[in-house]
Structure formats: structure tokens, C-alpha cells
Amino acid sequence: MSRTRVVLGAMALAAATACNSTTAPDVADSHLTPLQFLTRTFAGALQVQGSTFYSFHVSQAGPASLMLAAVQTPGGAALATPVGIGVGVPKGTGCTRATAITTPPGLAAQLTVTLNPGTYCASVFDVGTLSGTVNFAMRITYP
Amino acid sequence: MRAAFPVQTALVAVLLAAAFAGAGCDDAETPTTPTRPNTTTVNWSSSLALGGSTTRSFATTRTGTVSVTMQSVGASTTLRVGLGVGIPLADGSGCVLSRSVETTAGATAQLELTVDAGSYCLQVYDPGTLTSPVAFSITLVYPS
Image (cartoon, rainbow over all chains, first blue to last red; front, top):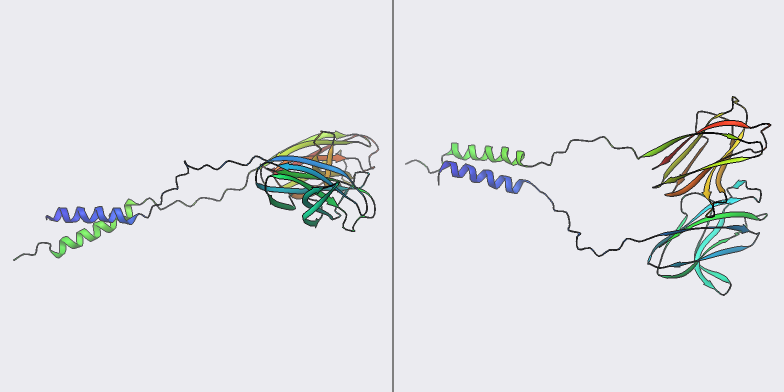
């Protein structure tokens, strides 16, 4: 073996082993289907000790989010009053809540749940914080 | 008798291999300046009627902070008007305010709030302080 061969061999070996490159996973075979989301606005009046709900149908399993966007006086003044919001299933003329929280209004979703395909309801209810009827608006996003 | 691979040859091979190994990788990345999240700035000038309100919509594509600055209300620095951000009703019948303030003009944002991606509306209204129509100017910054 010549000196030249020794040197070249060492260089090739060093080059081959020195780089710790990684290969991106091949996702060409992925069968994932992007979720399609629908957005609905649920607005109405909420009475003292009252509750109201909106039914919606989920066609794909995935996250559903509720954004209690606004609570207002009947005259339209924005309030920061917290009220209850929840997700459940319609039962009779009501909504049986499975998950619920108390939250002030805001423009970032306050409640997100993962739902399987089916019919559900989004509920808004007084948790004892109301002293009079208020108007509310909720944005519901679901797959 | 001479050795098949003298010490000098071995040293050269090791040094060249080390140099070649370092040069063969392209892992050294030039540091980059962190990019700021994209925002859109809108300067909105219009007029507000006595007892009225005026609204414009905007859409965000990601979660972030919306900032609203009432830059001017006529030539007054003391006249208060209403300023709010909310969501448009689906039927297009109005803007339901999530948060609102009554404010004079100023250089500092009077409203700042976090929003998700979606459609929103900005409203200016007369809270009962106007005695005549007034021109206003607003700077709206939102994530895009």
C-alpha cells in the first residue's frame, strides 16, 4: 500500500464518518386527512339563573373550541362579567353538559374539547353572577 | 530495513483527515436574527356621527395581540369617544363588542387584547359625548 493510498483512505473515512446528518422522514405515504373546521356564531340573551344552548354536528373527530366573545348589557355596553359555558349533548329540550367552565368574555377560546362525530350542544348559563339579563355572543369552531 | 509506513506518513494522514473531516460538513450555520411575528398595521380615518357608531372588520390568521390606538378625535384632546373590539354577527347585522373603553385621543394604545385566528371588528361609537360629528384617526395593529 502506498503512502498516497493511506492518506486518501484516511481522508475518505474521516469525511464519511464526521457528518452526523439526518434524513427527514418520508411523509409521502401519509394518509392523514386535514381537518375541516366550521365556525358558528351563537348570540342571544341570557337571563338571571338562566341557560341557553346551541346544537351543532361534528362530522370528524377533533377539537371543538368555544369562545365566549362578548357579554353585554341590553344597551350594548361590553361587560367583563363571567358566565358559565359548556359542551354536552342535547337531551330533550335541554343540554346535558359534560364539560363546563366559568369565564369572562374574551377573544381567545376559553374551552376546547376533543369530540367524536355526533351531535353536541354549546351552553351558556348564569353561574350566579348576573343581576339582570345580558346579551352574549359565542364563537364555536368544530370539525 | 525501512518501515512500510513511516511516522511522518501517519502524521500527515491524521492531520489531513482531521482537516478534511471539518471541511466536509456543512453544519456550521450562520446565526440569524430572530424574526418578529408578522403584524399588519392599518391607519383608519373616518367620521363619527352624533349618537352613531362606525365599524370596520379585520381578520387575523394566528393568535396574537391586537392593539388599538385612537390617534385623534377632531382637534380635541379631551373629547371622549367609545372604542371597542368584538366579533361580527354572522348575518352581518353588527359588531358585538367584547371589550370597549371610552377614551380621549393619545399616542399609547387604549385597547390591547389577545385574539385567536378569526374575523373581528373594530368599532368607534358616540357614548353620548358628541355635540356634532367628529373626524377620528385610529391605528390598528393585529397579527397576520
